Length: 297
Image (cartoon, rainbow, N blue to C red; front, side, top):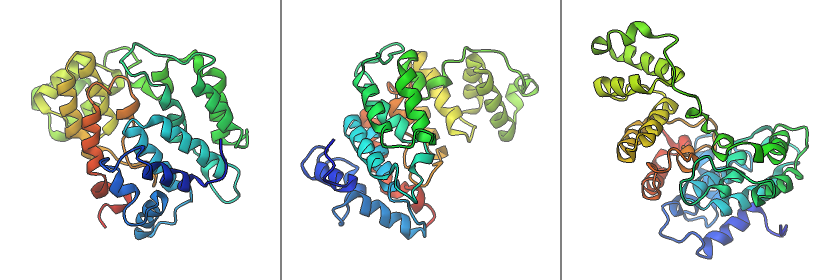
């Protein structure tokens, strides 16, 4: 890896040379008038009186690149960012695992939809994980996480490594919430929301369909709605799953200041048939209006 340019300078060059293209909906967010992706995102953060870590804007850019299927570019940016900030005093990069774990694994995603694709022991993705881990304290949170992926990543399906255990659990019966399931037609909005949580916990797919038919998507929890969209995909109806995701999108909430997109739509093999590139492009096009640090501003 060339070490001459900073991660921000490197990404600016990649954006300017047409790798992504000016038609990308990411362009206004990443560049604006500044000509620098990190400067653009950093200014947005400061507008909300947040004092960003220097790697936050770069983590946001990684998410956008993965969301737009520029996974190799995102992984290169990730490696450069960890090299620049992984051991730097005063930064907190090594205390996180997201989005670095996902970004470094994303290039291994297959183009076609395959059942449980897995990494091989000599996969280039694992070599990048090992290389990136060299820029970290091996005892740090991220250092340990990347070491585990490098050593054991080939032992698990890629979907599992990317957090796809939503659908790995076999459907079961309710362990709580039975009182609401027994009077499905009479539920209040709050009760149907609680029942959705119980249905998700049990992965009770049949009851999920019946609950959806009677009460729609009444759960305020993004992960519950995303799970149900995955169930619809597996039932052979990606169009219905796309409607579910569209309806539920406003429930998605960032878990960190730099978290700008529900990246699981781009990397979960179960969701990708519904979250098509054009669908994700539409979400990216709305990004300037819904960046977490610009809400209610």
